[in-house]
Each structure stands twice: as C-alpha cells, then as structure tokens.
Amino acid sequence: MSDDKGSKPEGKKKGKQDETKANAFIKWVKAKRTEFTIEFKKIQWPSRAELIKETLTVIIICIIFGAYIAILDSGFGFGFSAFASLVSR
Image (tube, rainbow, N blue to C red; front, side, top):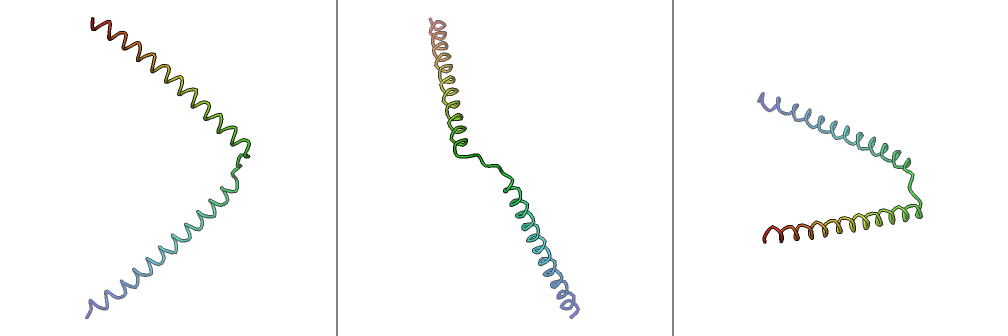
C-alpha cells in the first residue's frame, strides 16, 4: 500500500516538471523568433541591378580563374609528358 501512495505524487511531480520544461522551451522559441524577426528587418537587401552586377562579376571571375587553371594544367601536363619522354629514352 505504501508503494502506491509513494508513486502517485512522484508521477504528478514529473508531469508538472515536464509541463514546466515544455513551457520554458516554448518561451525560449518565441524569444528567439522575436530576435530573428528584429535582426531580419535590419538586413539591407541589394537592389536588382546590384544583384545582377555582382552575380555577373562572380561568374566572370570564375571563368577567368578556370581558364587560368586549365592553361596551367595543360602546360604542366605537356611539360611532364616532354620530360617523361626524355627520361624514358
């Protein structure tokens, strides 16, 4: 009999603790959402023209560096092949 009485209050306390933790989590989420909304409003979005200009700049730079690396790769490959053919003779 003493086991039944002892276990029921603990179960009730555990339920209240879980409920308190859930409420604390919900409050934390709401606070973070509010902070996120405030910070999101501070963002200065670029205009469409700025976005297009910067995107094209990045694409052009990538093409230039890609071509540069391809030329270096071809040059080193040719040089290595020439060296290998000289060594193998």
